[in-house]
Length: 362
Ligand SMILES: *Cc1c(COP(=O)(O)O)cnc(C)c1O
Image (cartoon, rainbow, N blue to C red; front, side, top):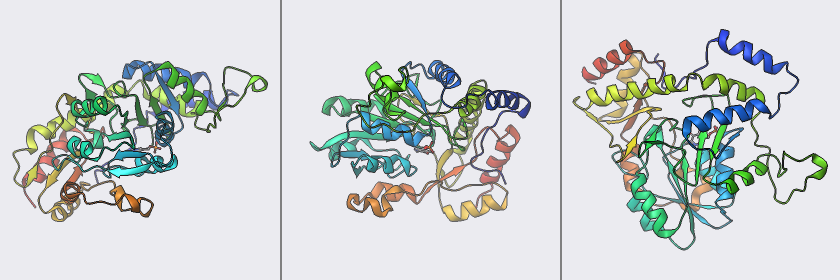
């Protein structure tokens, strides 16, 4: 079966000597390899203000703290995402307000968001679902007009671009995940990208109990509760090796995605998604809409090709009961979209075969 997701782990003859060195080095907690990994990631993204963390969820939690979200504040978000996007709003006591999506791509709809803004709205969370980038032109305008910060959940969007620049250097807060199934993995890990030295320094203390790592434990005074969100040297060593391949690996997702964009649009029963203006997707999953989805998925499975939705919509969970509202476009989208394999493991022959199978109909 060709899977929808699969971790990329560099060859053992390259990775293992590095891992062995760090494991027996006597220093496996947060140290130089973490800072080296951060430097490499800064170069890749083009943003000098970022921190490596233990997970993307940690990065989301810190984003909401830095954005000043307090109990009762409203945060406009999307149900079309993985659970941590919204559970981390609840972690700081924020109230999730569900925006509706664009029925042609499942991304948050700027007009829906605009209609939901009140004086209690303190942040807007944009999820670049499956590597498709939200309509940043429209959202930046809304953010400026109402003076509300944007938090970009780019867990699916490593290598995606807006205005020719990498996602991760545009908004006050952007998070990436290095969890097992994302474009690049360190087994677990995450990055928080910010836009100022001040936010960076505060986040650095928050990732380590509220302590300043540059001072000794005896000279340290905790002035704000922090967490244990640091990355360790073992995960960072995997990350440093991954960075040698990141362009090539992300490039394969994008190449496969563009291949499907070029050929699947002419196939009966398939509807292409709309990409937002000024953006370039990194195709973590290839996303499209199909008629008779159940039959489509069954036909693909019988051909040894995984095809399905991935995340469950987040607005049905009991903890978000009070946020429930009608989302007609989300309903429409949620019943019709599907993903097909498009990552680094899908070869040129396999993607040709996938297209041929779809063309035969279902
Ligand atoms: C994976 C993921 C996260 C969280 O990342 P972890 O590193 O697993 O904590 C957040 N948001 C989205 C959309 C994700 O897919």
